[in-house]
Length: 320
Ligand code: ASP
Image (cartoon, rainbow, N blue to C red; front, side, top):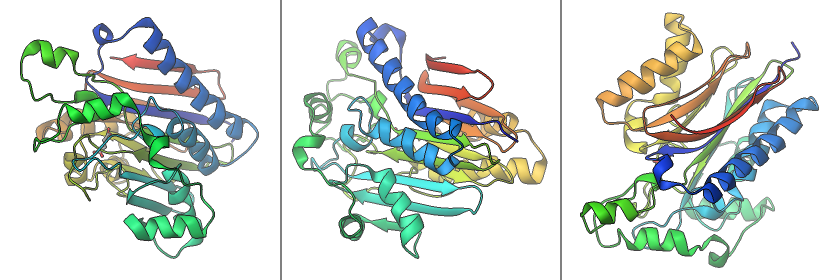
């Protein structure tokens, strides 16, 4: 088989056309196109799905527009803790990192954990030390600082709420205040099928604004935010992490395909529109299977997303 497919997301949530300017919309489109360029270049040259999801995710992590890597949101204590994971569908090997700070590309750390350690997940200081030992890039607080993110957190500081990046809840509950709260940006992820018939998935996030110090979302949890297995599918999720963890979301799609014989899209629709909805799990996911099927499914207002394949599909979308 010599087909390839790459699907990416930049987060789901209350993303409305009415909140967007032409300029911002163009910036998102460009960022998503760049990530598709970087990932599909790997696939077109015969590179692996793992290399492609790394390349696409790094591109999104380096872009301040998204809540991952450089653009990570602030937690309750003003820190920026990041989570990421990667999984290789050929081997079902996986690597993950949680609550890590100052790492430029958490997905690269997850990859290093998968390929250079005997573990699946490292967290906090141990993860940071492992990154330094393996020569990964670190950055100062300034690199991760943006006025926008800081203001977003300030709006919630002192409250016990944590919010999806796109759904920041403001202390002032008036409709005008809600309307001015910025509801954009998001977690990032990529799934790919390479020309060798192997699939992979990666997800990276700064988590939720005003989250508790030490809180870990679904993104680094294998089976919840990320899963890949050549037998079934590669999935990367975005949304309110707690319900996604409770629903073992990404693995559930794989189970529905494996045990019930459902197609990728049927399984994703059941999980996103039925199972997650029943437990208030707002968000979405992207998926591919080893046959070249791909889907992008969400139950929120929007999801930054894009797809490119060897058959000429090339699309970037934001809204429903
Ligand atoms: N799923 C992420 C988390 O809960 C947030 C997101 O997808 O935007 O940490």
